[in-house]
Image 1 (cartoon, rainbow, N blue to C red):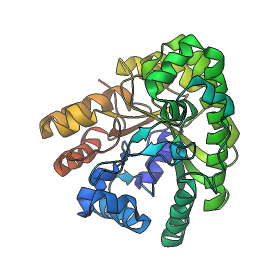
Image 2 (tube, rainbow, N blue to C red):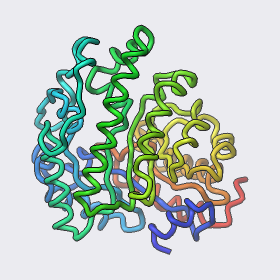
Image 3 (cartoon, rainbow, N blue to C red):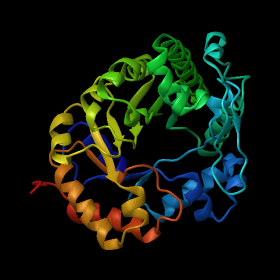
Image 4 (spheres, rainbow, N blue to C red):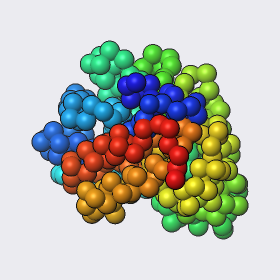
Length: 346
């Protein structure tokens, strides 16, 4: 089996020949790997594609999930201002929603006109031209987008002091995310093998707050895209052990996870509902650990999560800058060493 065949087998909760490995390189990691300034990489879709291809050549036994990206394009469409560092990923320097009253006048942006969204669409067109096809698209979920355009602290506070306005803002961001994914999918040809939705805000909310302010809006996005997308991937490296049951409501195939609590309990709670992907810690293990620690953690995760299929080995978030290449190789070889089926989990 190749890596994609392993992924397709394990998400059906069947056992492939071995545990598949999927990696999401961060853009600063790819800039260093390709030996190009980060700002230059982020401004050039062809360089982004070439950097991703270099990583594929270096690690052919893993599925390298990368394409093109324009930082925080969705937030800029509302008027957020970004920083412009020379050698760091840009961040939101100025939010668009400065007062709760601003929420009342918000409208869904036009993907072809507003902020950096048109630039992102041009990047996707370049990717399609260079690669022949684009397998997937990705973007932020509606709750994270609300936090970006208002500020995380301000939005989380809004939930408590003015829940009606919080819902009003989430209605706008949900429609924005739906429109944005529709547009990206249209640009790449009308359908997508994969759609990745990234929303980390579960780590800041109790389960009952997620029930009201998180889960319904994410579910609406995934439901809206059904029929256009073959595989849904929900990404959240923040704490999510308290909402594993709610994530099942999304009806996604893959959850790319970070902290999910006791691994065997998480496996029992999610098996047959969605495939877990992760969750080797990007900082504490992959960056700061030793090769021996990486292997031991991979073994531990595989034994707990891989039996019966429904598991993909990965870093708990992205492969971030300065993670040793040796540690990536150890992760991949650990899947070969400990992830051969059948796996007893003992």
